Each structure stands twice: as structure tokens, then as C-alpha cells.
Image (cartoon, rainbow, N blue to C red; front, top):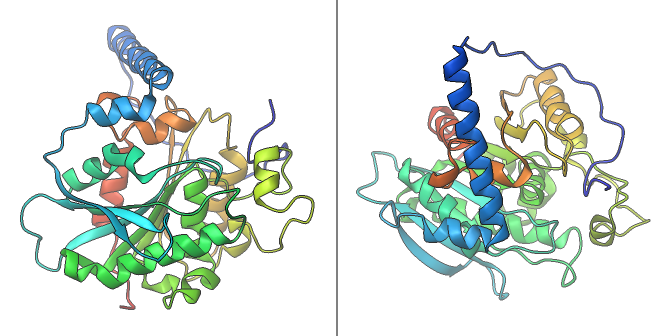
Length: 320
């Protein structure tokens, strides 16, 4: 089956090897059994309304939620705000604006209640944004929507209890592409009256960063096949001065090549001196990488812990 985003020629990139602690045979067996059980649960959830089940199992106490807040005039230019429970800390909460995946053809902000609640439980003010999808729009209109949503987050962070100098773009899969383009290519935030230098950082999970030309019909239709637009891939915008990045990938991702996309982009950013936190997850798959934000699946990958640590440890943007 062809990969929806990446094609067959990954670019080589070196990545540090993290030594693992030795475990006894019994401990290894218990860990393997636990992961196998979680993967079976994930498969079962995917077979029976998936994210709806994760949302149904998600506690609602971590955040106060404002649904359907308009960041533009069009019906899909809406976002949900997850404000952490309790009082904001001095200076305000860090802010994440999240974009979901779905090959730029599907997705709803309400599907990601589990993620909004998870990040809010770690003291992160979280905005989950809709954006227009194909066939209503093609590239680059969904980037213009995403830029408007991120600009709304920058403009309203303080009034929501957030810190406007600690705003992060974040996305999974196609949404990871959106986040990368907003953070690396100044055209998009510039069109919304802002600039990437205003971001404290950005987070990409299993995003396609080098994937054109593509042999997948879904991607082809979105990106004007065979007349692919120039300058449409994040790998072309790795440059010194870009915001710090967290790049996460499932080691066995069969949809987006981690070597061609995540590892290659990490290498290019690091070569320019941009701080990069790179994490690969041996037990996650493309969809369970984001599913692991939900408490029933957190044993698959510590992605919530890693993202929260990155957000809280990254210094504020130097430019307000």
C-alpha cells in the first residue's frame, strides 16, 4: 500500500542512540505483556468509534472548556479552549494551539477533547482548532486558516490567563505539517499580522515534512497534482533562528516515513543551530502516537509527559 505522504527515498540522517536500562526477564515479560494489552485496547477502540470512546473515558475535571469560539467569519473557523482548572500562575499558563490530522480531508475539533483535557491537566492552556478541508479548499487555504487560529491564540492568550510569550503551535500528522509551516515559513503568520519569532516553540507529531511528489490520490488532490506548488514542504524552510522544536514519531509508522520526515527535519534544524528535542517511540503507531494522550493508552508512549516537559522548560519567545 503506498504511503499517504512519504514516498520511497528517505534522506539519511543520524540520530543519537539513547541507551536503555537492563531489565530482568520477568520485568521484560511484564512490560511486553502490558504494551501488547494496550495495543489491543487501541485496536479495539479504533474498531468501535475510536476517539469517541477515548473522549467518553476522559475525565472532565482538568479544564474549563469554551466550545466553538470563532477565530474567523467562516463556519469551520472555530476552536475550543481548554483552560486549566484553578488560578493561572504568575505570568500566565503556557499556550498550545493544536491542529489535528486527517490528510487535510477530515477531522473535527471535538474529536480531541482527550488531548485538550490531557494538556490542561499539565497546566497548559490548550486551543484545539478546526480549519477548512478538501474539497472545500486546497493548499494553501488550510494554512491561512491555521495561521488565523494561531494569531487568535497570540492575541487572546493574556485575556485567557495564558502567557503571550509562551505560545506553541502543535499538530499531529497533517496538522503537524500545518504547525511546521506556521513555525518555519513566515508567509503564513505574516498574512495574519504576526511572525514565527513570536512563538516560544512548536511541536510536530508524525508530521509529513518532505512528501512531494506523492503517489497517494488523497494528497495529490489537495496539493494540485501534477502541478505541485513550489516551497510547500517544511524541510525547505529549516533555518537559523527558527523557534525551538519538539519532533516526535512512531518508529514503525506505516503512514508517514519517520526517516524521511521527522529525522530529516530534525537533522536540518539542528545543523542550523535550532534547539530540537527529538523523540521516537518504539511501541506507538501513527494514530496511537496521538491516542497516547488519552489516559487509557498512556502506557504505549510517554508522549504527554515529553510534550508537557518541552512546553514547560522552553524559554519564552524573545519577541512579544
